[in-house]
Length: 323
Image (cartoon, rainbow, N blue to C red):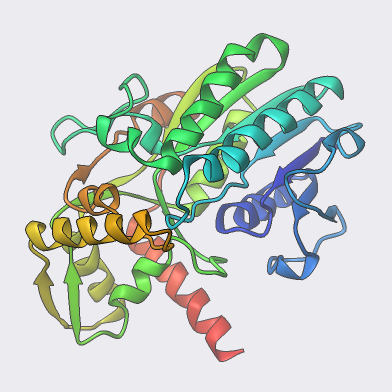
C-alpha cells in the first residue's frame, strides 16, 4: 500500500483529495495545525499529524512514497511579499529537500493557474503561456511561481509535477475559502457582480487530476486543472438556477472597482490589512480564462459540470449550518 503525505489536509482541496486517495486504497498521512480542523471522513488508513509548515519534515517522511504539497497561504490581505514567500515558497523548498533526503519517490506541488498566462474565451490560456504582467503584481501568485521555478530546476533529484488548478468549488470548504463566492449570491435579493470572469472547476476534478498525475510517468510537467470559463454574470446565473432564485443582477462598473483598488492601496500603505488592492480589483475586470486540453488529453480527466460543484458546495454549507 503506497503511503501519501499531504499538507493542508484540512483545506477544501486537501480534504477532497484525502477522501479520493483513501477510496482508491492509499494510506494517507495528513498534516494539519490541529486535528480538530479536519472535518473530513475518518478512516483506518488515515493518520493525522499536527504541525505547521516550519517543522523538520525529515522525521515524518520516512517510508513515504509520495508528497503532495497542497498547503499555502491564499489570504489576499497580507502587506508584504515576504509574508507570502516565507510560506508559499520557502517552506515548499524545505519540504522538497526533506523529501529528497528521505528518498521519497515523487513530489506533486499544488500551485495556481495564475502562474500561467490567461487568455480569452476564443483563445484561453495554456501551460506554455508565460505569467501575465497583472499576476506578477499578485504577491500570492508570484510566491507560487518562485516555488515552481525551484522545483522544476531540481526535478532531476526527485520526480516532480506541478498542478495548476483554477477556481475550485465543492464540499468541505469549511472556512469557507473560494466558497465565499457562493455566499455572495446565495439567498440574496440583489447580486452585485464584477465585469470580468474566470475559470471554475469542481474540487473533486482537481483531486482526481492529482491522483492521475500520481499514477503516470509524466513528471517535470505542469497541468492546468480547469473546466468552465464563465463571466461572473454567467456564474451567478448558474447559481440562481441551482438554487431556484431570481435576484436582481447589478454589474459593478469597472471604474468603481478601480477606485476601490486605489483606496485599498492607500490603506495598505498605512499598514492596514485589507484584501482591497488595485491588483485584486483589476483581476475582477479581466476574463481570466484557461484551457484544460492538456489534462483531458494526457490525464483523461472527465470534468464535472460547474452546476454540480455549486450544488455540492451549497449542500455542504447547508449541512454545517444546520449542525
